[in-house]
Each structure stands twice: as C-alpha cells, then as structure tokens.
Length: 250
Image (cartoon, rainbow, N blue to C red):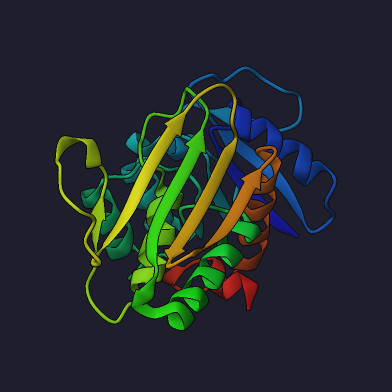
C-alpha cells in the first residue's frame, strides 16, 4: 500500500486525485497540504509540508511553482519520493529539480498523460523517418486561465524531437514580428487560450504536397491525476534519481 501526501489537496486537481485514489486498492492518502485547510473528514490538511506528521511513501504535487523549494527540502530531509505534476517552472527551477534528484527520488514530467508521452515517442519516430524534408509546427490549446505559454507539454514535445534531429533546431514563438521566409532549422510553437479547453496538442509535419498531423486531446483533468497516481505507486521505494514517463511506460 503506497501512502500518499497531496500538495494542493483542496484545489481542483487535489479533489480529482482524491476521487481517483478512493477507488484504488494499492494506495491511500495520509495527508494533504493547502493554504485552504478546510477539513474533508478523510485526512488531515496542513498549511505547510513541514507540518505534516504522517509518514508517506510519495508526495504528489499539484500546487504552485513557488512551493518548489519547500518540496525539494522535504524530499531531501525525509527521503520521500516527489512526484512533480505542477507546470510553469522557469529554467532556474528546472536546474534545482535536476540537482535535487542527485539526493532525492524525483518523478518529473511536463505532462502526466500516458497518451501525450506516447505522442512524444511517435513524434521522434516521425522525425527519424521524415528527416529534414518536413517543416514542424506545434499548436497547443488550453483554457483561458492558463498563465504560461507555450505550454510545458509543447516544449516537451519539441525537446523530444530535437533529441533525434540531425542538427540543432531553434524554437520560433513570434512570426508576426518579422517578415522573412521560414528556415529549415526551426520548430514553430503556437499557443491558443480560450474557454475551458483542458489541453490539446497538434504536431504538424508539413512536406511537399502532404501534411501529417499527430494530435492529442485531453477531455478531462482526470487523465493527469491517473498518471500522477500511477507514478506515485511506481516511485514507492525508489532510489535517488530523476524519473519520468519513459520508466513508467517500459
């Protein structure tokens, strides 16, 4: 039985996690962390991760990037695996996560969806087959409350394809500011924000007289919660290091 602490327990994703875990037999929630400490009658909720008294086998974080330092310190001090499911980290914070993985077991991915991670693998295969004959554009769509753009998932997809590119690529975010032809060494990234779109990503491979599109559409936040819970169960007892969906999908 994997004992789990949820940060952001009273938020939207925290409540989705509670419903997912309630229907599983391989894990349970022992505590929550949230600025809103309203009781739910199921498990205690604390304002700070350092106030938690219960012992856990994993921490699932669906909160806010500002809490990263506290979570990394908690994981280091207690040896508890940390599943980072929050998005919007800057480059400095990403370096902190990578550095912390030298002493703590950390599961970090930009998207907890199994489908998105499969899409990344398919995109890499497409690059290997299509080579430099196809231009690549990524279009991502999210709800109007999302702050960061482009999405971390779009960047993850671009980074995955760059791993198998024969030459370095640059990311183009803002075509309207210049008047010039597209170059072969760029990947275009475009963000759409509107309504209640959970998350949609299209990778467009545009060649001569043909277009190939890989698409993924998230219909609810539940798919991210399921992935995070699967990661928590997987990380129970793991040694320090950086883990992601590649290990979970093997």
